[in-house]
Amino acid sequence: MTKQEFLRLAHRFPVAAALKSNDDIEAALTSEALLLFMLKGDAFQLEPIIEQAHKQGKGFVVHVDLVSGIGKDRAGIQYIQRLLLVDDSALETGVRTIARAAPDIVEVLPGIIFPEIATTLQQLLPGPFIAGGFIRNATEVARIRAAGAILSSSSTYALWNRTSS
Image (tube, rainbow, N blue to C red; front, top):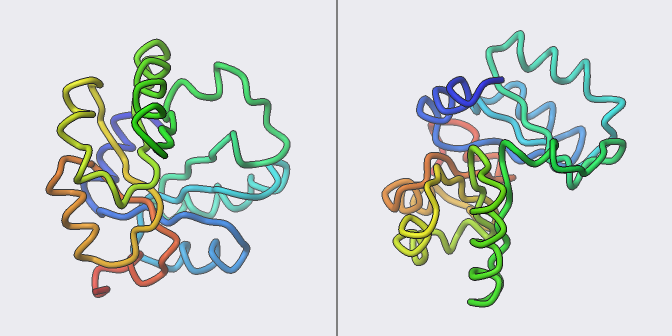
């Protein structure tokens, strides 16, 4: 999937389905979510899942740092890089690391704090930004989107369809 295709899908539906189990995969494939983020699993069993997602017009992103069977080298992190913010020191260190790596997209964790740090991040990094983690309702998704994130990533099934609240 190209960056342009990823951004097109993110624009069409504001939440990516964060997948941790087979039940999550089945629910996501039947949901309205257009981007699926694989957070756990075995790389050698992904091919049929990815094919099914693509047949349904969905994009599939594998988090190489979390899925077994994939090398975690520099080539694997050039597209989406995760920024885990636990304190101000992590922000400073993370921003320096991401600035050097120049990924296409930055995922901010935990995503629920994105509105509070968005202005700082947007001054320090070019983005675009995804917010992932602890996002549990549509109001939070709207706040995150209004703060400038192109997408929220959530394991909350209710957010994978437009009728959620």
